[in-house]
Image (cartoon, rainbow, N blue to C red; front, side):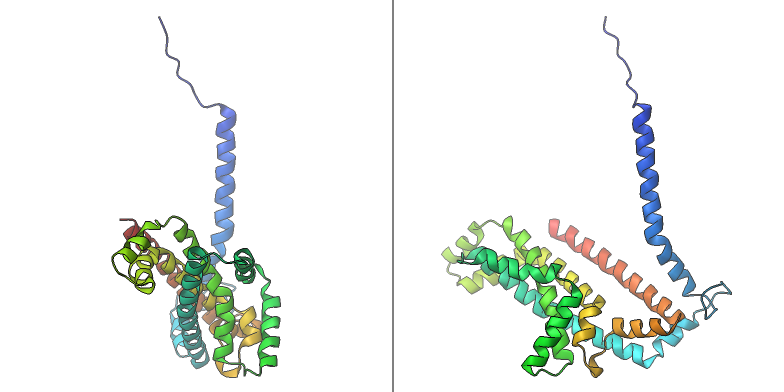
Length: 270
């Protein structure tokens, strides 16, 4: 007669799991505790933000009354929006051309496209400044947008390429057989299939453009000062509770973007 034994997990594995669990918790605390402190002190009445003195919303009120900050925010939104549109168009079309057609130097082109993703920002900023100066371009909105597109569109291209790998080539062939032109087949058949990757790349491009400071520092003019540059200038002077309030608003916006992205993924998977 066979007897069934009940196997228990060894004590050593339990201890190892507990160790890894504790280490993971410490990492999360290390990452998110400063953010929680920042959010909490955005409601602190103290201007020095060293000791908690009471609850207030005045820093948020002063934030909306700060004209330079609002102007810098508008500049950032304009630049990020235009950068996102151009990056999506260039990245999507570029990914499709590299996927659909075979070029002699396709691998070299792919490498050159991805270089801005790994190039140090200080090197890119200085090189773009030299290029714009040599070309006679006045630093302003145009130069900042061109600079941002340079490092944003590769992220869109890579995201779309990953989606194209799993795309059935018979879809385009069927559209062509039914009388569609290559452009119509691309716009009416391919682009809808690429929509999740395009949206993901667009969100990445918008976020990178809004957050960029080093490249913008070298390519921006007096009238195209962005929000990161304005905040950086305020932080160099000293602690300012309005920066905490502004950072809190950006954290809320980031969480909203993430939830929106996850919602789009669920809708696209249905």
